[in-house]
Length: 345
Image 1: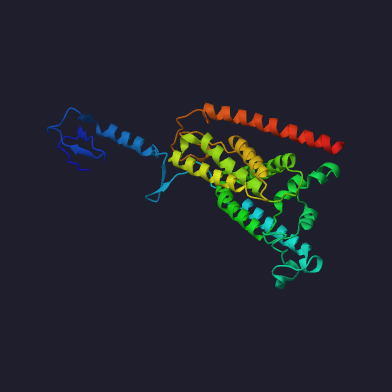
Image 2: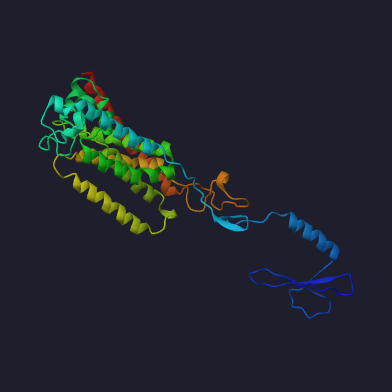
């Protein structure tokens, strides 16, 4: 800014340039000026300066200025993931307990890795996944339809999702849970992801019990497929806030297809996978919905920001939410009622 005072104290001529920097240049009276020149009384100018100084600066919604620098502003809260790591610890702990109770050297020798003592594995012929015997899994709470129906042990529909058939089984599932679950919990919090995980696991067990009644079933695969289904529905319902949508959608669908194809292999309970995936897919529209682009929660908004969008969600998001909730209720209630009737017979 450049300032020159004239001999007259009555007026000061101010010329405002239209440059992007917004510099103000002050010229004396009599100097040639453009049509945008404005003459202001010094007293009024001083008052105006005070008013401007008292007005808080507006901060762009995409950033917050701190200490002269810029910080990215994220309108959605980031959570600290603790529930998913807890799930991993619980699953591993239950597997260790299962192997302790299995006690292969005492109950059914010979064993694999006998140097592990009572933690040794069953023979590869009996259990190629390096794990316990079927009878031990059954004692721990594996899904056995006959026991659910005739011995009223409906709790097996939940407990089976926390047990694993072997080292390879639990290793694959826990790695998948870490890579998928932690990111989801960081974005949506432990309540929603916990509900998605548990309900999807139950949905997988329910579908498995309806179609597979001749062998036992264990594993967290149904719950994991529920997380995959939730990721897909979350992408679809929050479509407008994502970049590279088609590439992300294609990659996610490819991952889902590959995992479902693995279920065709022997000894894999694909009904649990399908039941978990469908449960998670429908629940994702209900619990993983995000506000539409342009709407910012007021408590998280930076100073001076005013939301330009009045509606928190788009109409199609409301429609998917209602439809999915109806389908979840329509799918779960008859299944639960059917099992309750069977248990009462």
